[in-house]
Image 1 (tube, protein in one colour):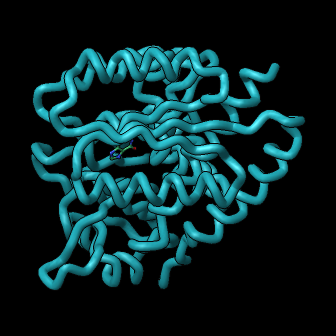
Image 2 (cartoon, rainbow, N blue to C red):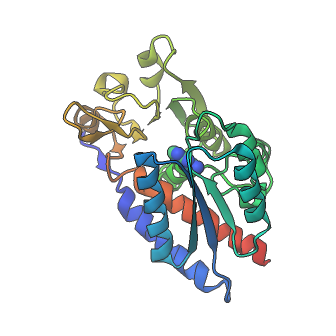
Length: 281
Ligand code: GUN
């Protein structure tokens, strides 16, 4: 079997077209996203500029607030409070990681849940489990949209999530459970990873380890979703799955790049538009 390639770019583009229509229906309200970037981390700067460009392309107002690495926690919290009260801003994102002297939990909890388009606030995390109006984290929610777009029914399927981060692994399992999958969480300390992944109908590889998942780890016909963003020895971008060997055995697979990546930013736009709609009600 050679797997169907799940084209994240194409799905993201189709979702962005739908978002354009939703923005046009907002009757004069322009969705606004504030991005707070602290320090000079190169990767963070790249991600933030990609987010801003995506906003501009869609007609979302984006405001970049840059603060020096030395910023105090109280100055950062004051800025977040101002954004919480700014009616032109519907989404607030503080780019992580933060400098060591700033407490990440305090910062995440300072953003009002109604503007927490990252879906990291404990209210949104809790509502993912218990129900109610919430924002879901962008990467796992983007994966759910990809599975839906591909027509992959999750009811009764066994999904194995490899990775337990707050941003991807943990919410991924919750979202799959919500769609009636049977979910197993594995991680870097799991004994005999292969014994678990070989039973999976769907493997989500989100451990940040290059070539962690090979053909030997999956069963014939499995769906492989690769969240990895690693660099190989030649500096080339690669995922957590060994693409060529898994592709020969899986029924569907996401490439890196061009798979999950384009969906993450699209879901940030999605959450920002959704927030503007909720505020306009
Ligand atoms: N740093 C890496 N990924 C993310 C993300 O999804 N949101 C924020 N705020 N920071 C990040």
